[in-house]
Image: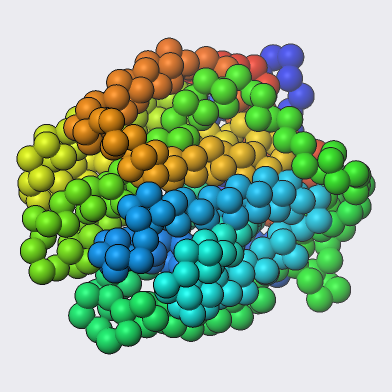
Amino acid sequence: MTAEAAKPGTTPRQTTPGEPVNSGTDAQTGTGAPRAKAPAGPGVKTSSWLAVAATMFAVAWGGNEFTPLLVMYRNSGEFSPVAVDGMLAAYVFGIVPAMLIGGPLSDRHGRRPLLLPAAPAALIGSLIIALTPDSEIGMIIGRIFCGIALGLVMAIGSTWIKELSDAAGAGAAAGAKRASMSLTLGFLAGAGVAAMLAQFAPLPQHLPYILHMVITVVTGLWLLSVPETRRAGVAGAAAGNVGAQGGAACADAPARKSLWQDLKVPKMKHKRFLLVVLPAAPWVFGTAASAYAVLPGLLSDSAGNYPIAFAGLITVVTLGFGVGIQSLGPVIDTRRSARATVIGMCCVAAGLALAIPAAATLSLALGLVAAVVLGMGYGLTLVAGLSEVQRIAGPDDLAGLNAVFYALTYMGFFVPMVLAWAHTWLGYPQMFFGGLVLAVICLVIVACAWRRHLPGARIPADAKFLQDGGATGAGAQGEASVSEAPNPTVGEAGAA
């Protein structure tokens, strides 16, 4: 254990060698020297996060396999265009409550008990959809179950991956990158495979969902092996290593309070959240939905005999470029400014600008180019938002703030339904132009908050406790913070 230097007027804190502060460099001394990785706490392996990522992947698969099949359901004649887009958006009614309730409760009662129900919920959702392909009510109920599962993995799974990654000394940016890529790869694989099965395989309304149920069972069983990172219902700081008692080392959650107090997320009022995260969040899935739910429907006639395959292609392209830019997230993102969010919003605006001529000419080529740029906007705004949230949140409301962020992002899934409804009065080129204007306004708001209200460099108490192998002491209590001042720390000043 070594004492880390602090600014004048602040209290030095104890850190372990290799503690991932300021992206793995010794920012406090200004040397920029990389730190060695800290060993994982008892019960936590460097690969522990993979089981959580696999469940996130499987649930995201189920959440997005429906998207390229929208063309199939539209062409079936059973549903109106507004009804089909409404079924796409229906799972938001499962996502948002699951995130806003499950996220804060997992901060209080642990990650495992709140995330384990996700895989069964996803399986039930796919089963209902497969059994009721001609029933609008059945499809909506199935989609809501898929949404409940997705809400749990997005709020709790993202947090669990971060805590496991921090405990294994993976670096400050690893948690956000791993969580966002797990989701995006699941969205991509689910859409691509479902489209191919629906276009070329038998039982197009059943086989994609059957495959998803098998994958969900396998990943759900794997999740049972993951150690808890947050002990439930004990007041105070981390109080001992339970690894010797058959469990993983984990930090204590705050004492149990009323349900209403458990659901409060104070950090959502943080000015950085309101000025940087909030304006960009709805565009995360607003752009994705525009690319792979709106454009395929507009261009289906141009796709000839393969409208479902084209819908799958445009979804894969969108999410593929989202994954690609997310892999560069740690390079683009910085705690010193809103650079990643600003670049992401620039991609959003550029993608909407390209969607205007694509909608006007019904060109497949222009549609694919627009999907590429919109996918980059989706990917970067997602990973940038998660990174900002993880820097803002304290150890007792990380999952809760993740939940609020994701709830805001999923408001974007109402875009296709709103556009289908407004199409009675406006053409899609005009509506994309209106979206472009709104995106530019949000971009300006974020850019004006470039360096404002920056949270101090922190390491969550959970990660600190796990890295110390469950040791008690002042360094493991509460949230250790180098500085709460809204200015860059020493060694960060002057960087772009």
